[in-house]
Image 1: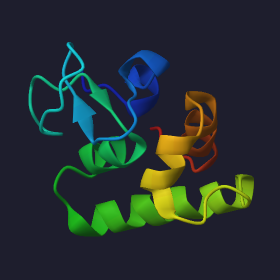
Image 2: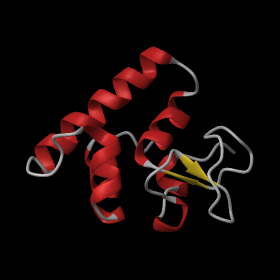
Image 3: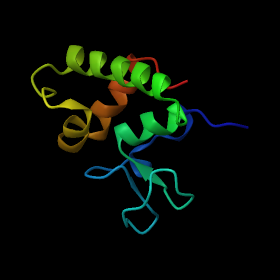
Image 4: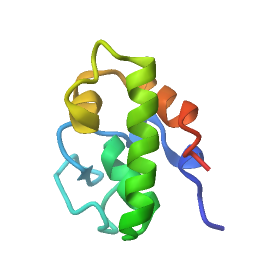
Length: 101
């Protein structure tokens, strides 16, 4: 069974400051088998599966929703948003952008 983002994205496997971390909190490659935590951009990249067009589409959907929901705190892109807000706000954007499936 292929897991969907909404089945695996939780506050426990989300991170800030880097694309991905292993179970010990050490920075690792986003696509590494060791990666157990990812930031918002990392989850979007993972979902796109190396497809640049899919990544651009997902990134745009997330960005648009992020700007609509949190205009006062998202003027520096997804990475900055991810690194400065709570998991709940990141989760809300994923959910509203409808890219959790």
